[in-house]
Length: 125
Image (cartoon, rainbow, N blue to C red; front, side):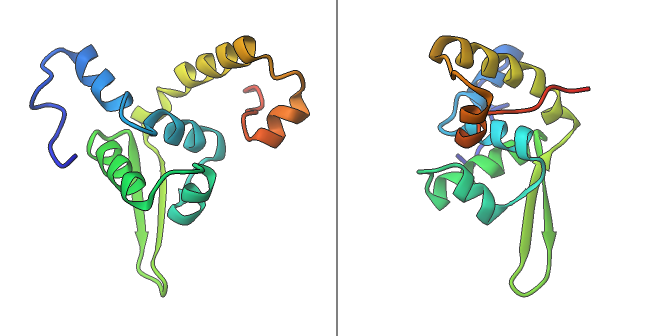
């Protein structure tokens, strides 16, 4: 998806939904919101089942939309880390609400089970 969502979605809600409804996008954002800045390889492991190609496409789109940032460290091998920008952090409230709804609907019975599944985010102080 090389083009910007600006091109075909003049309505802000339509544009945001086009960005967020892409395959794996919400899950990537959830992982980054719960894990913090994460290197590409770790992100690929945390988002089980995603291909390298799709992860790269999603990350590029989210970076283009200024929802996340990409930090490149020119080491051997190169280190690329992704994290949420201020704009991306604004989504955390929505992601937390979706998590609460998912737990309610699918009744994760205990905190330890949620932690084991990678779905638990401790409450903010």
